[in-house]
Every structure is written in C-alpha cells, then in structure tokens.
Image (cartoon, rainbow over all chains, first blue to last red; front, side, top):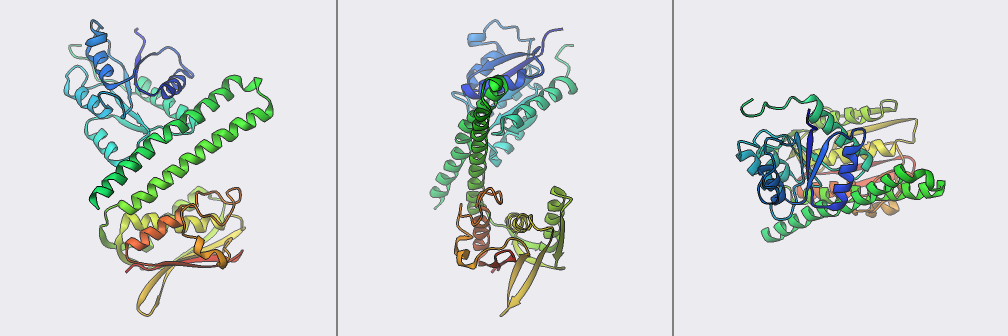
Length: 148
Length: 225
C-alpha cells in the first residue's frame, strides 16, 4: 500500500520546520509534501508547471493549508480545489494564525473540512497535529476515488 | 470614520496574524531544544528555556486580549431584551466547573433583565464574575453576588465578592488597559478585563465604578442607559 501523503502549504520556514516536526512525531511513514505558496500548491495538485508529469491519481490524504500565502492565498487555493472534480473531495484543514471571524466563515463557506488556529504553545500545537493525523488519516473514511 | 474603522480592522488583523507567528517560533524551537538537547543543558539552562517559553505564551495572551478589546470597541451593537439572571447563572456554572473543589456560594438575584447587546454583556459579565472568582481564590470559602440596586430611578447592576478587594486609593487605575493592582505571580491576568468591561458599559451609554477594601472584597457597579 502506498504511503499516505500529507500536503503542507506553508510559506514561513519556521512554521514549516515546526509543523513537519510535529507531523513526524510518533509516526514517520507518511510522505510530507511541502509547497511554499498557493500557486505551487495548485501546480502540485493539478500536475502543472514545476510538477508537470506528476501522477495525478496520487492525491494527498490530507492538505494542511495556511491562509496568508504569497501569489495565490489560501482561500483562493481552496476555492479552486472545490471547483475541480479531481480535488473536490480532498480533506482540507485550514491551519492558520488567524481567528478572524470572516476567515472562519469564508473558509467553511468554501468547503474547508476543519479550521485550526495554531496555538503558540508548541506542546499544544504538537497535540493538535497528532489529533488531526489520527482523525484524517486513520479514523476518517475518505470518499472513494473516481472510477473505483 | 468608516475609513478609520477599516484601517483599525486591517491593523488588528495584521497584529493578530503576524505578531503571533514569531512567538510560535520562539516557543516551538525552545521546546524542540528542550526535547532534543535537554540532557546537554544544565538545570539552569533548562529553566531559562522554560522562561523563554512562558514569556512567549504570555505575550500571545496579551495580543489576544488587545484584539478582543479592540473588537469590543468595533463590534456592531444589537439591542434586545436580555435575561441577565440566566446569563449570570450560566457563567457561575462554568466557573464552578473549572474548580469544582472550591467552596463558593453564588447569590444571583432573580428576574434581572435589561435592554442591551447580549454578546457584549456576556463578555462584561464573564469578566466581572470571572474576576470575583479569581480574587476570592485564596479564601477557603467565598460569596459572590450579582444583583441590581436602584437609586433615583436609574438601575445599577452590581457584582460583589468577599475576596482580596483593593485599596480605594487606586480605584482610578482599575479600568486602565494593562493596569494591574496585583502582581502577576499573585493573581494571573493581563490587566485588560476591566478596561474591556468599561468600554462595553460606555457603549451602552452607562457608567461603571467600584468600591472595595483590601482583604474584604470588591463591588463593581454599572448602569446601562
């Protein structure tokens, strides 16, 4: 069985290092794909640009999406994922600093599966990431892929 | 005015979003260092790292409180008839759940209702009752009251406790943002709660004042126009 892919869309190098650290804790058999802006995220998922030729049947089991991103912001990435048949059903968890009401509402309105505000306390953050992984990669039954 | 509000909104958005991010790095990498290299650092070194983390978390709390304060100022008001007795009872229940072992008697008067913004009043009562709960924390038993008293036709709502109290000489400092009358080591807090309550009361056209005595308790009164 192929290893489950977790995609992290994050432009801040510190946040990337900390999130990857938290993801690797207790479990190392996931593949973590990191992209640093919204445009790259879309290229990866739709196998265009620098990811042209990537096998699009291999989709992440979980996308961790920051909101404030260069080029294409997180909400726009979400909008485009939900508009495309190939990515419509992928679990997307917004992982952000913001707890602004309008970001929450807009995130859910565009079809985010969950919304987590990154805690400053790294122990709490690690715990949150662990629960996310357990829930989305182990407990949750994903939608069957097209044609299967 | 609208332009100023928009600017303020953008400012507080940027503050909550951008200022928290470096704090996460400070806390996170300190913790990573403790986990990975903790055995190579002296006891004192580990203590320093813990202090770094505590300070980062405290600053995050301060930022959140400031954002909440500015939100209270900006929030749209929706006046309706609100059952304050019920609101106070539910806050009291929540407080008891946080520390079930404490012996605190709540005396909440029946039938108090007011025309006000329910969300803002909830924030105000959360703060006032939460303070009463906090500042009675060092007494074996305590009593916290919520009631209403009327003089010259204007109703004054009050929250009274028999806790740590305060020196009336400093009563003008109670409502200033980040002003505290107790050391953080004595009672936790950021010093923004009463400033928030004052803004909420003023937005309702009301007034807030306090009476207290050291070690004998405090009473906070407020009116809603």
